[in-house]
Length: 306
Figure 1 (cartoon, rainbow, N blue to C red):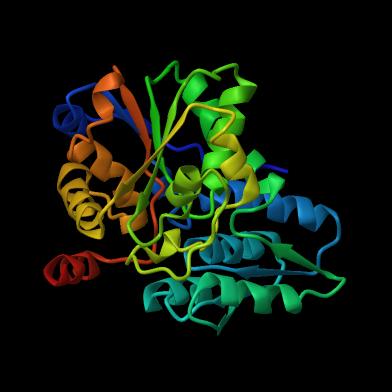
Figure 2 (figure 1 turned 180 degrees about the vertical axis):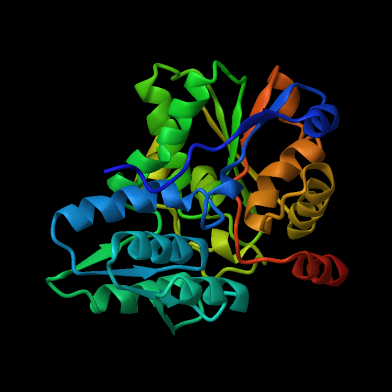
C-alpha cells in the first residue's frame, strides 16, 4: 500500500538565509494535501489500523490532525468522527467536513475533547491520537529520510512543538540515519509552552490552560517520549511571542507565497528575528509544518489585535 502523504520539496530559501544570516533550507510540509505535516504520521497510523480491521476512525484534534484523519479516512473508505474543542476555527471544522467526516465540538481545550473522543471508542473503532502514538512518530520520521536523500545535512533543525509528535518523529529519523549530533531547536509560543516549562522544571508539567492564539500548539502537556528526547538528544527549547509568530507568517507569505498558521510561524520567527541562540549554527533547516485552519485575513486580524 502506497503512503498517503507526498514527498515534499526541500528548498534553499534566499529570503530566510538573508534574514537569518546563514544558509537556510525549508522542508515544505505545508504542501501536503490536507495542509500540514500531520498526514505523514496520521496516514501511516490509519493505514496500519485499517489493516488490523478498523471500521471507523475516531480522533480528537485542534484542527490539523483532524483534517489529516478525515483525509486519510476518505482515501481508505473508512468513516471518521473528529471531536474538536471550542477553540477550533470554523475554517478547520469546514475542512474536516469537506473530507466527509463527522465533527463534534466539545470542551474548551483539546484535552477535554480528547477525553470524550476516547470514551466513544468501541471494539471496531481505531482511536487516532494527534501526537502520542509510535505509529505517528514512524510516519513523521520519513521527512528525515527525504532530507538525507537530498544530500542536505543542516547545522540545526528547527521545528514547532505542540504535543511533541513532530519532535519525536524528527529525532527518531535522525537517530535512524546516525545523525545523533544534529541538534534540534524546539519552538513554542508563550501560553502554549508546556515543553519549555517541563525542560526548565526537569519534569513533565501540565499547563493550567492555553492562552496563546496558536491553538494547534495547544496541548496542556507534551507526550512523555518528547520530554524524554530532550534528555537524550541535543534539543534547545525556545519560546516566542504570538506577535512574533504572526509577524513571521506574514513575512513568509511575502517571501514564499505560502500561508501558514502561527503554530508554524513560531519556528519561522526564530530565523526572521535572529534568536540569540542561532549564531552557534552554521546552517539551518526549518520544518514548515503548515496549518490549514487560517487565512490571510485572520492573520491580519491577529496582527491588528496584538
